[in-house]
Image 1 (cartoon, rainbow, N blue to C red):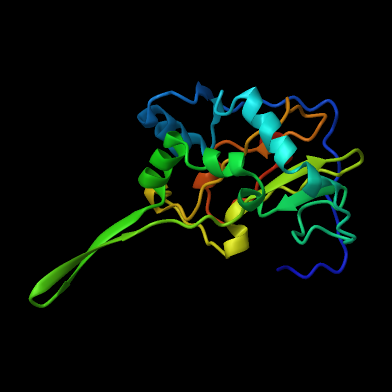
Image 2 (cartoon, one colour):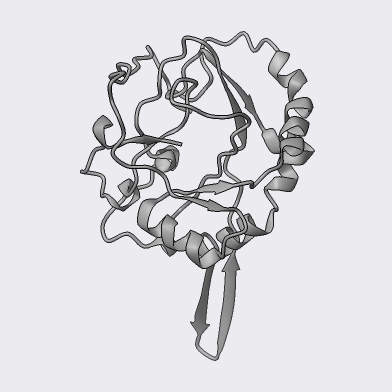
Length: 215
């Protein structure tokens, strides 16, 4: 866990800023090949109708008690998340619905294509075949409250100390994230900021706020 002496957050975006790019949208039932092609090109995609309104309400009901708990902490434990943002960790253990969504066929397909490693090792007179399945790294919910500053632009895999170099290979990605919107997200209420194509940059290329759009 990062040790944070004092939180310093970036300045708000210029209210007049209008994104020049946007995130591609596809139905969650789209062919896996199309979804993978967009992920490879842009680094992110919005899958529409991945979860139903009923499922979103079930999640809210299942974690309602956790939201009402007073954690009494001065920070969330993650240095990029403002203290005004309520975080419920261990979400798959608190919400049966979230755990079920994690096993949706489309997510299983994406894990199979991107994260699963398969390789063989020959030892003199025989060859062993291996398959390494991915692990769930983190599951949490955000409740962004009034007055919360925006997060700094960042790579999610930085928490693992991942280093990036060109050229990018989707099949060698160390992780992928799935964010499920529990409400209609807008720039005003804290929609995720996203820079299309930034996953292909090495660590020397830093993002600029005039390159981002909103999920």
